[in-house]
Image 1 (spheres, one colour):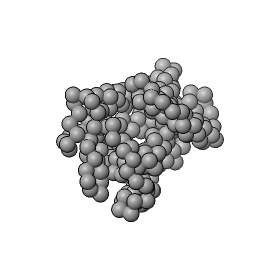
Image 2 (cartoon, one colour):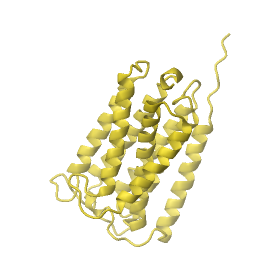
Image 3 (tube, one colour):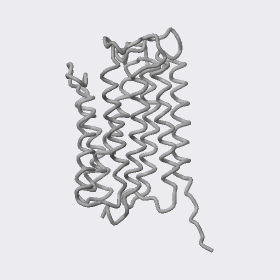
Image 4 (cartoon, helix red, strand yellow):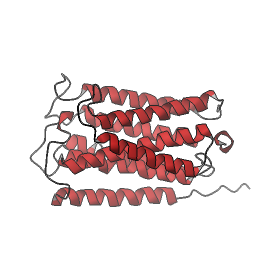
Length: 266
């Protein structure tokens, strides 16, 4: 009788622990005002600020989608024979990064504080750094050291770009532009790998990720202050849909990674 390999629960346990600790710290920070005063950070995303502990409930609680996506990645990462570029630990790391998107974004919408806004941007830099560095590492055939250096470099570049003042058409601020450009690097890298003949990968997951992200970006642009789709008092918010669709995109991206065989990544 064939013996089935047991699922490794450590990636799920790690993602779960990060979720519990980060959400717990966020809740304490919101209750005690650790993130600073409300300065209107994030108020351009339509939802009116409530006179309550959580300033924007729809835009805040919709970030639970990232936590669920990160936990799902942690669960899938523990499956036997699962690999992303012959280094399964990266799968666990991606699960943690996706989980952190949730409380970091919620920090801004729950408090509208300046520090909450920076945590939101930092979490975006982390996922863009992971996706772009992972793609470039595989395109160039480099190792985990190159990935780590690239990851840190992308985050630092984004942090520097964030300090550029002024309005940027379509994406509002320079930080969003950097985020989008590094995601474009990731998509381009995945397209290059696919054209090289990595047919054993399930390209449908990549298309699903790109499609969810494109739809999310369209909604992000259409559901801001001044738009006919903006209804500040409603609990049905377009920006909340942006969060949920981005969570779907992150999970689909992981499934694309996980469908890659070791020989494809070599």
